[in-house]
Length: 116
View 1 (spheres, rainbow, N blue to C red):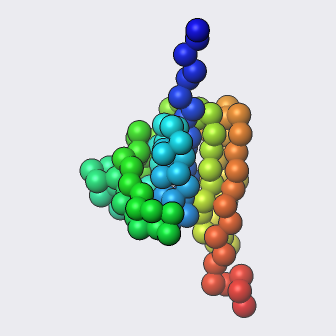
View 2: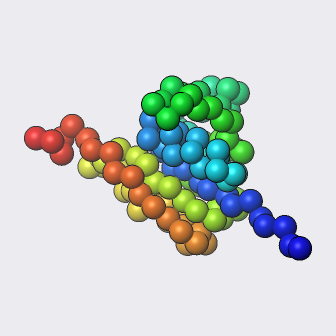
């Protein structure tokens, strides 16, 4: 019997939405890595802890990266969960890893300016 490989996931944008998705995917058995531009050291040392109606969730990412460029191996799956800002090229954020990734999905976070 062959052993199945643990799927790898890269979460780009580890705010509330990205960290929640990461926790669910980690709980399902994936090796979840995150790109965390802010609170990098805190996430690296403590991981994520959150309270949710689905129950308290916590996990320590397989790796914490300061930028997408630091991702050396292509993940099996990529989740883009960043704010929608006029000056951020969201496609550019994932261009390097997504060229070698099987599946990608995106979570749109609305900015204040898009509500006006």
